[in-house]
Image 1 (cartoon, rainbow over the protein chains, first blue to last red):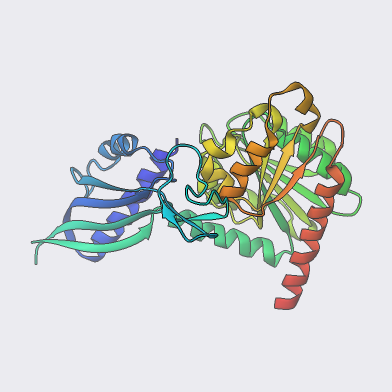
Image 2: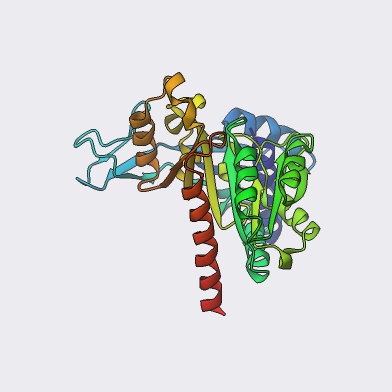
Length: 116
Length: 226
């Protein structure tokens, strides 16, 4: 629902790093997004095509790496990816569980063209 | 020449840096602050009113009200006895740290003990945007249904206390409390929970006591640091 804000932040971070590297153009962005982050790739792409126009990132390709939810059971140490709505441990049934992965939400890297 | 620049930067980092500044401004003025999040109609404004009525004799209260449009909620908070500031987000689905930063100068923070921020009614987006408040409170309500922790895990994971409002409606609604609480437990183990009813008043005392204790704890923490 707030993909425009998110996309503006992505553009700002990328432009800032591209400027420090004295890049001519940004060609790719690598985003890492966990399953628990409620962000829709298509929607980010939609805004990206509009707001990146006329910037160093015009035409850059967005790569989305989706990280599935991975939980660990605090009772029996079992690691699992929950299926369906119930996140409880499928081995021992404990509800004392915590996510190991799936909450990521960051820009990992960009590819740029430089003169050098 | 093409080269890869490693970044690894949180996409909402700019918001989080502003939230840290808001927290510092609140701490410097000795204000304890709560971020109320909930779906529309869960009872955020009703809980604010009842909290104000219970605490306004001993504390100075202020409310920052976030809504897409209208000042209806801020008017209710002001009528209950708090200083109220309305933020109209103009369509944005959540408050962010920049909106709070813009609203804080409208309050005389040195005169305020407790600031309640009422977020936009929404169980998705507000969870992603830190404001700089000390505690995040989720207000669930019985008529919403018992499946909400399963459907909105991000919201239930990030909060410091859970209010379950409208418990007076339990006899009339198909709400399985065990199923609901199991969902909460998985996402946020040992979360402090206040079942209450803003209309009957049941359970309000425990909530109000928790708020006053949290304010005292914050004060002794700030005193200790200074």
